[in-house]
Image 1 (cartoon, rainbow, N blue to C red):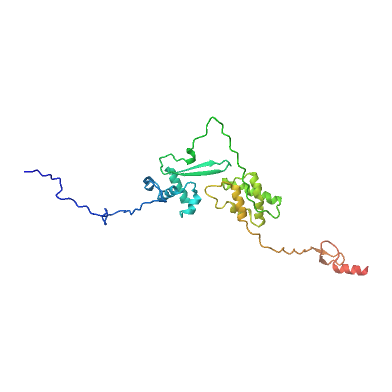
Image 2 (cartoon, rainbow, N blue to C red):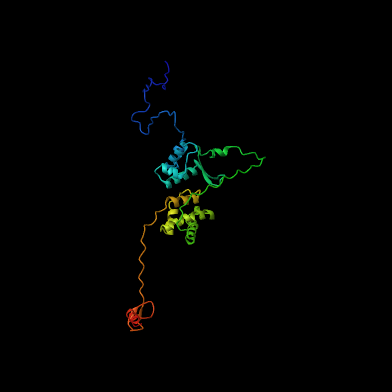
Length: 288
């Protein structure tokens, strides 16, 4: 008598043809089409991150899809998406904290401070800009300092009709006090002298110092100012109010002399000083 293997199935199991998924399978299904152009590879460590917010994940994906050199500052991103400056800034801080973003401040040869932003597709990889990977110059030969480019001239400002010394001093005091409202508005003496006539032009248009100050410091960029003097010069020119409406000069107040007693008839009359009234002066001339 032969021994049968109980593990062998009695008949072959037929596999359904076509789609592997049962039409009533629960959960997410995918309908994928192969990309051949304009696509970005995103790791699941970012797309399925358990600590990042959904906004940070989406923003990190967007940054990795941008070409090299594309603007990635807060104002540009806030103009591109509807979340606004505050939420965009918070999402960038999340990406920076988890190693997906690096922001470094550098000084250019002209002396400007710029922010260099680098998007990292692997948070564990050292996140460095491409320029940082270039080999350092040889230490044997001393480096010659690059010549500084000349300082860019400030834009012109409105000119006052009557640049009185007192008005110019008031304008200088107003500009010097802007740093108390924002430390980025610390101006040099040269920049202050350049901007002061523009402030006087506002004061001539019957705009008070408080209103001028508000127009200059309202809605400042959240990332700071690279050239505060140029920014203020632009605002003084672009937002210059029109001259006030013409007002006819007021009629002079009539002179009202005090009451005097006539030296001739002792009657009261108004005059600048003691003397005779009109009647007595007339009688006096007739007698003479």
